[in-house]
Length: 239
Ligand code: NDP
Image 1 (cartoon, helix red, strand yellow):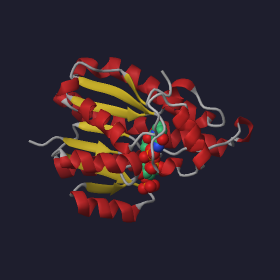
Image 2: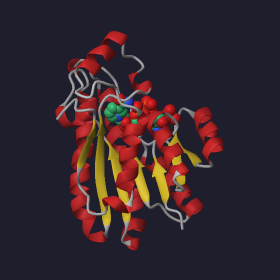
Image 3: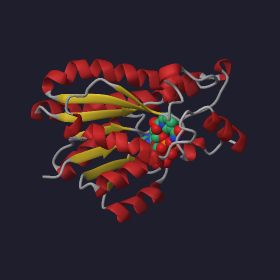
Image 4: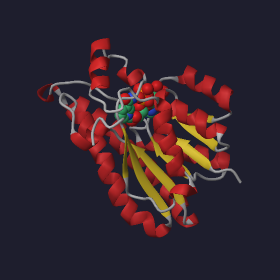
């Protein structure tokens, strides 16, 4: 039987590429969208994947989405917590509202999704969870403290949860992209991009497929002895 993957933030960028690739590899794919309904519908028609409206920052919404995916496909084998936002702000300009929105969208979402799928994974004694963090969660980024904290939290979540659910046959890993060419980086000027390329040992900006290849590897049995690990996909930008 085909495995089922549930991908949060599948309407655009890395998540949308993951929806396409996992579908191509024969997985049943359920993905969430929030604001990009039109793009989600196009992706559904192009891939046959199942798009579900969900605000990942709300636990009820995440519970409903995972329930719908489970009903549709009979279970969730792989969870990829990918949805996220970023924002630039001086630390002293970060309001309570900005802080909580960032933490709820990027970090609580991964907690809600893992908590929602774990009971079925534990009862089957198998499952894979992958959190999409960021290299800024590993080293911190100036003027992105709330983003960096949310992504560092995903690394802690990955490590602690991997220890807790490993005995139940569930693997939990984390992928930390570097600079990847998506709308999240649309604000970068060509000078900024040039600087980033110069600072990257491999001399280029990453593509969605670079991240998705890692997600696919970590979803499959080829990585069956890998858990609790943090994988940089950053061209060597941080080592
Ligand atoms: P995009 O901005 O291209 O896409 C973000 C996705 O997250 C969209 O599908 C969006 O859905 C979804 N999303 C945002 N807020 C919510 C919400 N409240 N509820 C549900 N879905 C939501 O981002 P990327 O593809 O570039 O990034 C994907 C992940 O990779 C993020 O977690 C990001 O932090 C991480 N990352 C990206 C890097 C990069 O350089 N691009 C570098 C390091 C990490 P919708 O449009 O439907 O609202």
